[in-house]
Image (cartoon, rainbow, N blue to C red; front, side, top):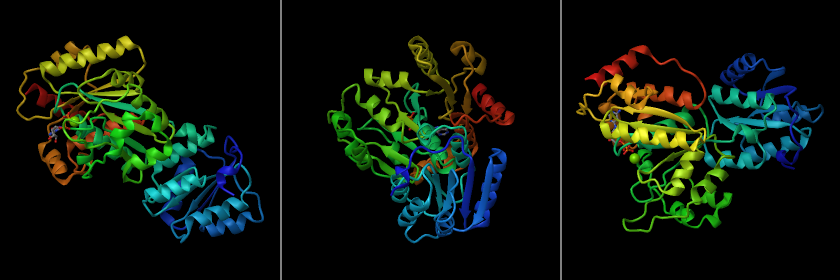
Amino acid sequence: MRISDYSEAEKPLKNICAFVVDRDSEQILNNCFAQLEMPQTEIVRGDVATAVSRYKNQPSPSLLIVDISRSEMPLSDMDNLAKVCSPGVQVIAIGGEDSVALYRSLLNCGVSDYLVKPVPRALLQSTLKALHTGETMRSATTGKLVTLMGATGGVGGTSILCALSDILSREEGRKVMLIDPDTIQGDVALHFGVAAGQGFSSLLKSPERLDTLVLDRVAQPVSSRLDLLCSQDDIGTDNTWPDDSLPALIGTLRSRYHYIFVDMPGQITNGLLSLLEQSDICLIVLEPSLSGLRNTKNLLKRMEKSNAGTRAICILNNSRPALQSGLSSARIEAFLKRRPDYVLPYDGRHFCAASLKGEPVSRSGGKAAALLREIACDLAGQSVEPKPSLLKSSLKILRG
Ligand SMILES: Nc1ncnc2c1ncn2[C@@H]1O[C@H](COP(=O)(O)OP(=O)(O)O)[C@@H](O)[C@H]1O
Ligand SMILES: [Mg+2]
């Protein structure tokens, strides 16, 4: 029997029992339970086998958290656990192996989530909160669509989106799909040091083939929580696809990822425009130039007109050291009729180092990376007070 064969879980959670093998995980769980004021909770030193022997003879709680890091055969152990548990139990597995294959197999056998140690606090808390307040795991994983538009070319859009994907997936434990619809010149894969495949562009051209199995084959995992959809076609290849391809794809992805990020190409087709209007958040990246301001204003106007409720976040990125546009922050604000939400300083050293290593700039440190962490928190709905000193220094850069 699979765990998912049981009926719906009890809502809200009545009681939780965790079986963990180490002190660190025990402490993290203790903190999470205390912060969320969970009802009856218990933490036991033990593993799946301990849980199996306990629930052979007594009713299981509404949520079980089990440590599989010492399991030699985690899937068969989870199956044994399902056999002894009451109907309605939800299971979260924690373990040491950061593997996409294991993650997928565990989800397939009905586990609600798999967290890699050290247990990511924020993710565990949001999962527990969702379960406790009666949201199903499905709704907990109904993904946000975040599109990124560069107001002009070379403004740092792809670098920013890749860094945000990296922070949310690797540091915050969210499941992220990053899509690069530019199948000829897109460079998302390069930011992660991987080669793009071919499957995605043919999937876009034949959306009738779209199902979860095809998606599993085409998506390229770059870590256990971050997948890419991108292709590398030759110059001259027909890279047009039906307008409804991407929206249909996003519909399928929303139930499987916390975030779906799309690096929007400069040329906005009708299909891409409808994607823009479906987004929960649109990140507009601009530099302090006249064309950057004009294009940003037009985008904001379009979004306002469509009245789709998309939240626009304007990121003023100083991606070039020599750009002395003379545009003061006051003029920028007056023209846009809003203040940029974030101002990224020029940080040639860290951006260059990251691109040479084929990894996102979030891993290289520096001031811009710190600010990108604030933007990631904003996307995740956590408020972070901007550091006044950094904001000031960024505005100083602008003023020249
Ligand atoms: N804040 C920044 N400081 C220094 N270099 C940056 C910054 N933002 C972006 N860059 C650099 O600008 C170049 C263009 O970035 P990219 O992300 O490819 O832009 P886009 O996707 O908008 O065309 C890259 O070399 C990148 O490393
Ligand atoms: Mg780009």
